[in-house]
Image (cartoon, rainbow, N blue to C red; front, side, top):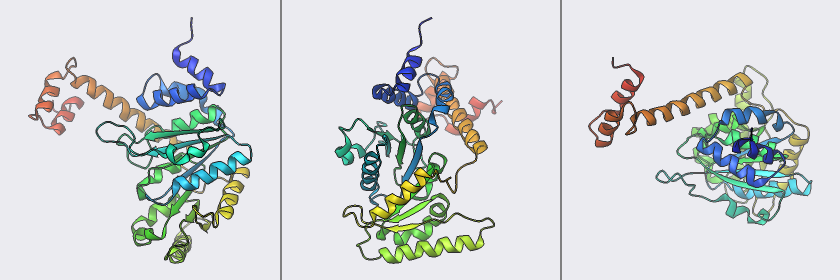
Length: 319
């Protein structure tokens, strides 16, 4: 029996073929093939790869810092994959930003793979398939994987379930919103960096972060890992050596993440995502012109049906 197209792509992926990697990421985003079976097959191949999450509000300089991290890894001979999560158009589903444009210095390097992933309406700073894309990159032989989130603040905590370490970037202008973001920031960060440290308010922001970390440590019931804070200027290079050395140390020593999701929680989340995805596809099919609830679908399109009533009908709760 001839191997399936998906199986052939996986074999080519394991040989390090970047075209196969790109196509499998696309298939995963679109739900083509048996994604769960592919991930089960590739799960063990992620061993040895380290994933760094880079998050923070828009304008914090995430792409500039990622560019410096890439250069550091390449100088050490490591292969690097970057998954840059972009906000998507609510109409076309296409990515609005293009982080690859900001990293053109590495575009011709065969040891660097950069892929923009559209959120397609998914909240949490990541796409629904960022975790799977990271597994595919690891299976393709990339030693270091960087996930740059879309930058929406506290809701970006999903990166904790994907990355081995999370770098949170802030800028002095973010000082006024720290109080509303602090719970998520403190729970998700392994390393802080205050970027654009030459601007007024940088020292005050760093001091506020330090005070919040100390307050949290005092009221916590368990011993919390230390979270370093760096003052940097990614554009001018100030303070970057210290930050990059700390990230390197955590990579080399395989420092465990301070706030990783336990394996049971990861499996439960995967199950919830798969059930939701499957249910959505089934609902679309049932409401389609050829589906069992085609009349209800037409009523929804015409605006004469209540969507909540439609859900109850699909669940059989209106009987």
